[in-house]
Length: 363
Image (cartoon, rainbow, N blue to C red):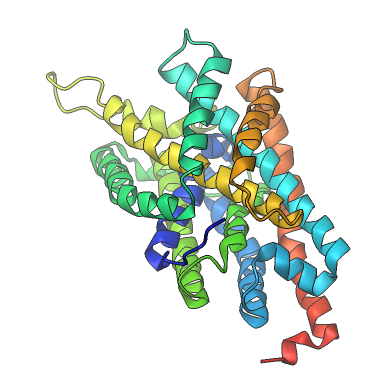
């Protein structure tokens, strides 16, 4: 990999807000609302509070050890074999997440816009575009994310503005939906909805300087939680208590309520363009980071050739579930539950080991 270290805070901020922030426009709201009804908008807040200390701790360790990415940090603290084993576990969980998430996006495109098209063909086209983008390298991905970010955010803000008259504040009640215990439990279990933040640390040394990376991480993570919470709350206030848990694609369904009069029909197509742009950018970033983590674990310097086989295996694994309900409500639900302890605990384990080794006392 050729690394010229020209990326700045703005590129990381753009990639992070698109990569993680797209949770507001996929099937994540549907998954969470099936658990906590109209109180599902609180779950991301709890999840963020649960997982952000581990993320900040990981950033602290990266700063302390200097000039090391995620996998190099694992090996420096835990040793080569344990570090690589943990790194491979992180890769495997992220790769399964990539496969299941991409299948959900393909199902959305099929059900909403191309119901007669074979899922396999759509999947190959979708991942094929992501593969072409990922092959361009991190610099091009970063610059493209920064250029596309204003368009994506403008379309989302426009949608929120146009739907504002449909909001009914009383729909926030009952405030805790199916119960406070359900909200808290799901908030803790689903903390891994922010696990993508950790994947960016593989690129810790690829930016202009490490301070740039930290600034972009802090800003991006807090903007992401604000956006996700805002739109989840918006969905709650537009759909009533009984229907919010039955809406398959809240972001797309909410655009059906928007109109500009009799002369402007199919307004949802306008928002689809920018949703597709964000979706492609998300999986371009996802594919690239996955290949990078795998290469770092197995000491492969030029990892761009790995992107193609990973794109292919993403489709193979993503096609295993029979339908989108099984994919989202069973496989993805359980994967998120299993990933949460991993991403919460491994930075803490690293800190404990580094502390007893005396590495934290070094400047």
